[in-house]
Image 1 (cartoon, rainbow, N blue to C red):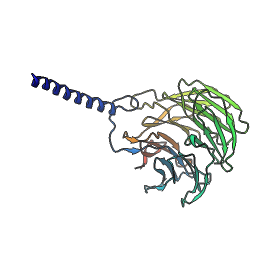
Image 2: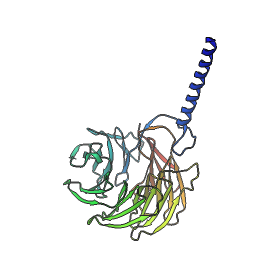
Image 3: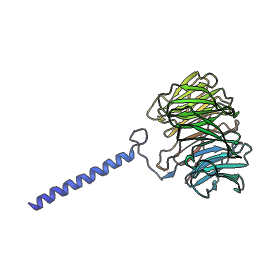
Image 4: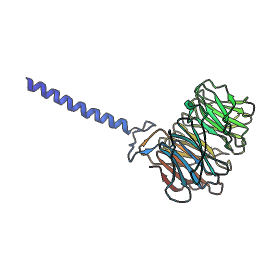
Length: 348
């Protein structure tokens, strides 16, 4: 009798272990869009920010352990900038490309020589609890912070003095974008709206409504006439920046093989003729004038650490016709006309 009970218990235990392992494997094999596509390969660090130098010859990539500077013209190993304390979050080149500015998890902003890595200056007077939630103005003179209280503040990067506070969103602000002339700022929020503000007065100019989900990404066109916004559910909207009129809605059609999910980043090409959006495991290109879907730039599906990415960014050099996409520890450079993969950089 005892042997029979023991046998039943042992059989039950084996079935339990087998079922648990199978269940765990199934969970691990599900990607963010819910499909059962296996995620395999070496773990790679998440990417928290990418920024081109003004001439397009260098690409700064922020990972958990530091900042990597890749030469976009070669396959050379990157230069490594390591934060003295804290985890790096955001990075930006100065307009002349000579200075690299970064912010870490303690709210410390450091300025370094982009060539020699020599420390130039440290800014310490910014709210440490908001570290990582920043955006630099195009000329690097001001810094925008998104606060947990649904507001955004503007600071002078040299004097560390608060210049403006933008109040109006009813929920948390997810993304900030400056117009290239530095006169306006746009904010996207969990309240499903995009708001446009006058930087000099702090007054609201427009409220863009129509998204059915949280706004996760924003960008101004180079001429400042248009605004892109991407949301939590696979949709990018193109707006008139002066009137707030919706021009069109862009989508990948929700095809399973290219589903974007959360549109984490959007961008215009330097000439304003192309639109890029990044989400899931891929980036997409559209014709800005017609809304035609042009290219799918798909990256590898490997496991990674951290929560960074995906990212997409056009080279500021219009002659290069290159777009950089970053996700899951790899940065890929693509030719925008042919969709050909030119170069791949790894962060590991």
